[in-house]
Image (cartoon, rainbow, N blue to C red; front, side, top):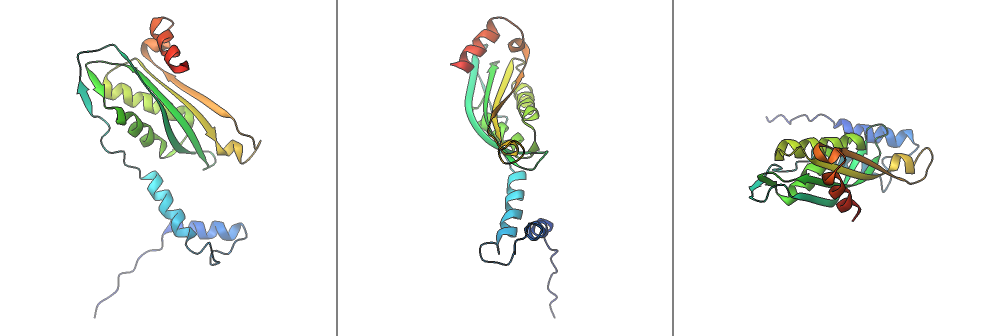
Length: 186
């Protein structure tokens, strides 16, 4: 006689069922029957994001050049309201003997976005990883975000918030900062 394995109910599915009931919905009605499972699957997919290899570096003889990658679009979740925010990320760094592979900037940004987050920490975390991986202290990350916690609740209006993490020579007045600002505003 074979004994069937007992599987524990998924707590995220139960949470979604409870939420639907709390707001006056019937989780068994057409259109909602599979919603709790989709809800649970989405939360796990979003927070278990695996960026793959993020530290691919290429040797170069052209050091000191300003590298700017912009328009990296990410989604994150406001840790205060559990509502999404979108953020357009720009990353700049002064190259060293090691160049970071172009796709790695997006991978790093997505890695930090796929968790409960605030925009200020998001850009700081991205900058810290770029500094650690490339060895360059001259790193700037700018994020322009729109937060649904502001758009869908409270004041109920849209606005874009800008957060920056400016490091090394970019943080001081001078040619490096001027070059960075010219490229960012270009």
